[in-house]
Length: 428
Image (cartoon, rainbow, N blue to C red; front, top):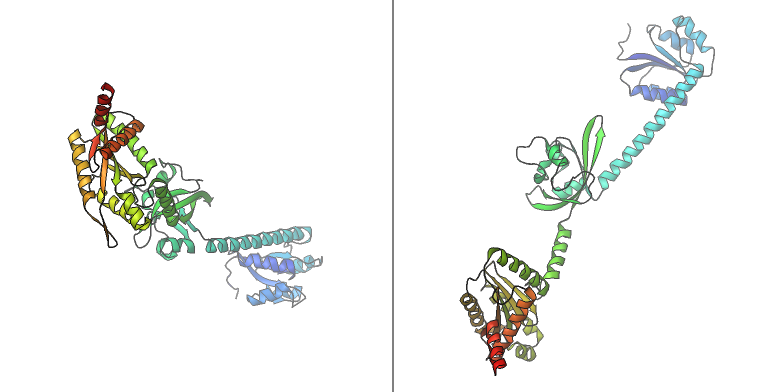
């Protein structure tokens, strides 16, 4: 009974390197089925390989060909240098043409080259898989409709999902902001992002979501790949939470007082410029208050700088309770504080806030068990009444503050009071 074959029957004559490589290639091809391997050396590599896969082997060519006579359409590959093989084939299969001689040599070389290329590709694939697996950055692959196709261990660590959790899922599961509600064509928005094209961009920042629902900043570097006519995208993903915290802390330190956490002089000037531009546009009054603490030096000298720092922190805390969210409080340095009061309507409202500040500072301060008393002298300049220039307004409020100190402290004075005294002095 003829055995039912699942592919084109093939006989290999010669079990050396060429026969071994040819057999190895045919075993991976569903269109071919090797029915016999023939070699005089039973220990030849191809013979041993064939026996492992239960393929019939023969040491006598005539015997091997005769055993395959039931498959007249078989293809015979002669990888030996024996020219008499053709006669043996003709006796069994008639004028059956076989592949031998120069043709067989060329075919053998092609097979060996294919085997070398295959080994190199397999080696490269192993190396690539190792790199992806051990990479410190997350590597996410998805197709042109946003379905996740690859997810390495680093990505698992970053997002808190296992690979099994996300394969086949939408990338929206990881980065919700990359897809709009109801949008089915993911890649259309991905490619035409209004902010910046994502492809080929290194360090594009997006908001991502972990398995526990936590949102965090993610840095992406994305590239495109075509494979078998299909489009894929490879994202190198890096959790930049710690970096963003450091950046924010650095930015905050550059613009805020290290002791009280209030805006420093540089940030105050910037806020003042912005407040003036808003006041001009909306045509309202703005007040600038310059506060200098009365009695701070004595506390610093008698109780020490440590208690002086505690006092400044407590002063800042009290002052913050007195202003609106739309106003600005800053520490200019030492014991000097400044305020921007936006849209105050009238000079009387500025006076009201100044008096609240003086009252708050008049209450005793408990500094780790040490009770102390201080006060405050406040100078006030108004926009646009006194000036429309930030530097001028600040200088005017400073002058008014010194006038308040000369007039017994714990009080407030306007720049108009300074002008009035200057006018009286010049007339005298």
